[in-house]
Length: 337
Image 1 (cartoon, rainbow, N blue to C red):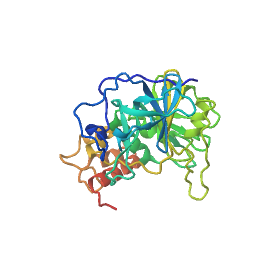
Image 2: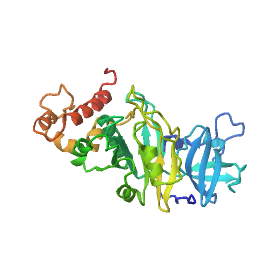
Image 3: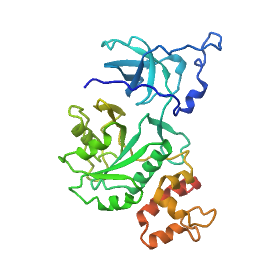
Image 4: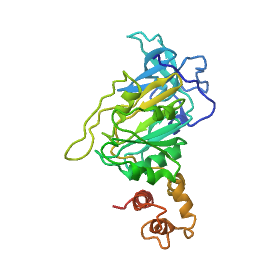
């Protein structure tokens, strides 16, 4: 299938790095208030990044590109829509330059840990985040799922969950945990038909995120024959998967749909996210904490926290509460633990 480019839209989400676009430091010529106008330059979509080289779709062509010097250290990530100058013929030895990053409609960020102040852009211009978790081997991690739902909410992206390896264990606990949150949960197993999942992806740009070994690459290979994504095994001792995808890559599902495979993650930090944003992102929790005393931090030592009552009467699982409080504790007490 020929790659294609999505047109830019007005407005959108921009990385803060682009607020002070100017010449790179050390440039010898004097600065000028007149900046280049690249309005006539062709627009492409970044499909992959590899050691400073960018794979960009420009219409039916695949173009290799580097960042132009004025962009300096400013980030260009998979999903970005960019303007190009130079050789955009797509010839084997051709090399173009990315001279402008168009305004981002959405930007999914992560930090290494919650107390790491550095947020890194992961992918741009997606409208869905597909959280991939295994029912077993490796076991599901409710904390990771909650974090990804929060990150999706902050980015303005719709979260979805797919549970793989359901031939090894039941997905019922995960379905139950998130059914009141309004998050769609699908279950699948190796060799199963994926019509329901494909239907959810059609017409969207969807990024897949999950732990190593949960089956992201297997899903993509089944959805897109010929994708050739590497598949790894889970370590029998640690129960953790081995990283097989090393960089994010965007692939065309059909003429109107993209999926973005990302490397398996061991953690997903929420630096820059406030406790209020966490609670708001988890809709069922937001309804419960409306009954908390004013100023309640919703932590384990909080007096009369409505979350404890919700667990006692079965409205909230103890696993969900533990996950939420781990996130809130680190965000409100950076020196904790």
